[in-house]
Length: 366
Image 1: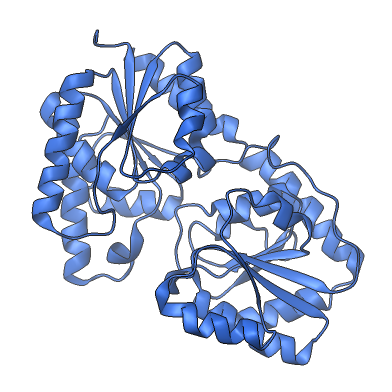
Image 2 (image 1 turned 60 degrees about the vertical axis):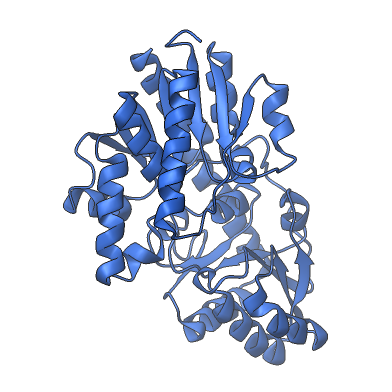
């Protein structure tokens, strides 16, 4: 393969790449590059990339594992892949591809375009694990040609810790496809329906959502609390109990949130940290108000009191207060919040902004 005709993408999840970056990949293909995509899974959504001419490469690894030997093996796999493909640039997403793909790029002398989608618990909680993670990030993205950040907090932290020494830029998250996620008619007045879209993990605010649903459902029977996403083992028993008692309605996972957003009045995302919450952006694009936490990656997606409400992180009491405030709003004010949310993402979070940023940088390299 002739150097300069290919772009290699390293990521830890086919589904996430399809949901949030498909348009970026297609734009690179349309610009004349052959795109190789390295993923660890067997997700059926790989077919969408193959249909536009991408070549999928299986690179197995445990995206949550902390085995140093396994991570060294991953770096060697990336090293071999880069030497084989000879890409003009390597795009990396998520922690392990950023770190170990970045190390491989440095050893091969290939430009890396890294995207920091969030810093995770290790950074947020401090201590020795934060120091180790900072060290790994420095090795991985410290010499990247450009680092794209999804919120100002993450960027400022990485600059303060001297993680990035090269060029960096702030993007509006992954953006949102405003044609795919179009404005949907607001549901009729009646049972007020709330939707929580996430894997049921502690740092997504699962416990706060459960506590809020129990309190509000008892006080306001004319409400429904839905959950859309994978349930991790830690919460299965509690979830089953809540479903049995009619507190929540569990809908399971889905590849398309739009039909579910169509029937609800508001989405709730009480996450402890995000790079930039795609759930919030997609909800707003569909014309739904959002109640979310006042933390980086969530706070940017909501104008408090206009397109939704901001909540103190890890506070079930404040979440209860904001949900109750929403319930008591007149129907037309709820609907107006949804329209304002749509307008906000149109102005600030159009995915085309992200597409242009990547294409401009790749063309400079090419």
